[in-house]
Amino acid sequence: MKKFLKIITIGCLGIFSIFFIFLFILFYPIIFPDTPEEIERKRVELKEELKAEIENKTIEDYLTTLNIKPRNQKSSEFNSLITEFKNQKHRFKFKKCEFSYNDNIFFLEDSLEHITSVFGESDRITKTVTYKYPKGRIKIYERSYIKTITSRFENVYEKKRSLSVYEYPDSESYGNKIVEKEGEDNTATLKSLEQLRRNELIKLKESYGDSLVEISDKIELDYETLEINTIFYKDKNTDHYLLNWFKINFEYSDEPYDIIIFRDIPYRLTMDMYDFLNLSNLTRNDLDYHRLYFYDKSCSLSSNNIIYTHIESEPYFETSGGGHLTWRGPYNPNKSRSIDYITFSVETLKDLKNTEMENADLLD
Image 1 (cartoon, rainbow, N blue to C red):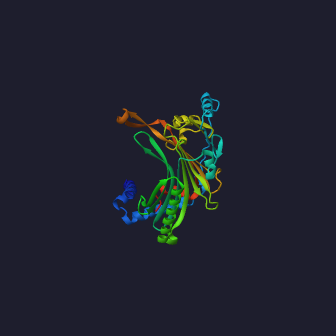
Image 2: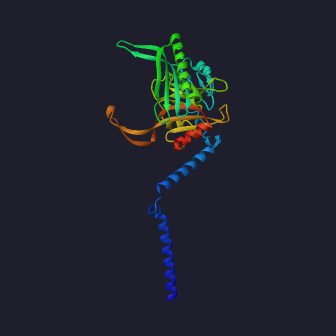
Image 3: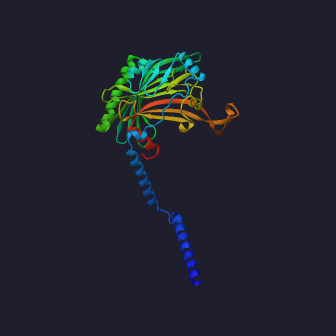
């Protein structure tokens, strides 16, 4: 009997010891919390591990497998949309690599001259040259645009040109204006602004010397009627401006077209995202919170680049009331709003890594 009680006692002590060790491990961080220095050391280690993981990624790590196609091209709804599209004055088609406007084909990385031959003269042109110096950036903006002057009887439209030079210190979020000048779009203004730009650049080079380095040169074209925005970056090898970004905006209701074709699927601008998915082979599981993303490298001229396609829509929230007294209610996962915009851009591996690090708050 004594032997039996001894075994029981030893067993209970063993169980108690194990339970005590478990509690000690469980509550150790509370009883003996890390010092601020130890917390910071662990934070830095984790940050460096995540940065190293991103730095080791290749272009293939960012590719997506979504292959969007029409679901049922023989349905009456599909055929009706296609017929209506063909009768439009303005017709946009966006395939995987090839885009077209009124059957005029264009691609990302096409020249500025080719894009303007497709769309014509833009409503607004902005040329931005960015220089970097040890503690910040300098940006020189040259703009050509239509200025609306509202009078008592009518609106007067004047074509203008302007030059602005801004300094963006690394420690500040907003730029400090160095110089700004505007004039009518004529030869005299053009010469005056060109001289002003040269003079300001000479002053900057005198101030910063060889530490002032040009890091980008881009031109942005805006077509207000078609609601499209394009950005071209200057190629260092050819000095040509090549299309890097194309955005078509559906957020407003006055576009001169009702339907576009995306990956051979007709989309009416008043459709919600779910209606669009129903015409395709995709499902709601392919959405990233009402958004679609495509990464593909087969369309790019460089093997180190990816073509990024982004379709954005807003989630649906129930509303009550009306006018200024409209209240937003709960999120409804069974509904979606219409697509706000579609963007296409050329992304380098460096761009992709920087974006991922920025989203993870890993950039210094």
